[in-house]
Image 1 (cartoon, one colour):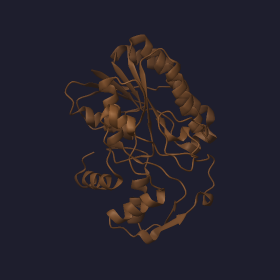
Image 2: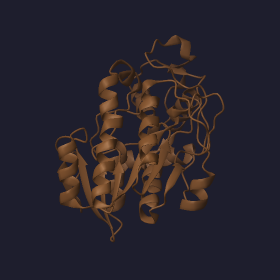
Image 3: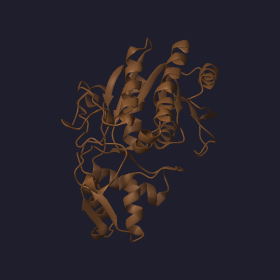
Length: 301
């Protein structure tokens, strides 16, 4: 099987490359906007701007993958709210281009989506729950889901929540590393206690996406962590595990922050379908702390 991943310089993209190295029956094409930021490996790297229709068509035709995993997206929720046109181009128009090219080459498409398509009034959610996004980011990701569902191609949608982990070279800092790095510097941080999520270890999400790819399993799949936690609870667990000063963590509610985009209060995803159909088995949050510590200690990303 030949697998092509967009957004390969991001956290999930890097984990998919790492995972593919151990799978001999998979040839891997990593694509990203700009130069490759991954360590050398058994894969091909191609530059690809998914917002360019011509580039998408050319690269997919030249590489001719069996499966495409679209990890490329604009995911900064507030930036999406204030730069709506750019958000729509990246998160919706680009998906139109990928669908068209996948249709041309008969490739299976896996589209990444988010818990932010929900309003947070009834979480955790299963795959059949009714979406009602509160933010423009959520609207754009729901629109991309609708495009995939309405398309003639074989496809899957993988929904996830608050992905965290460490990677070789990445520009964004996720919540766990932010808490760890801040406390190590002795900085006081404010962390909210009135939002609930099922945070997702990047390796678990990569394994779930790879299972979908290998099975070409169609439909919607929830791929997140198994523990429902507030960011404040995540921060306290991080401080405890890494033996850092938890007194630097101030517990606050969301009203303390002025943010352009509204956040859902209680999301989280129900994983029963993925566990049954994909043998999905994510780490607990506590287990993931052990996993991350080993990676940071041995630089094994």
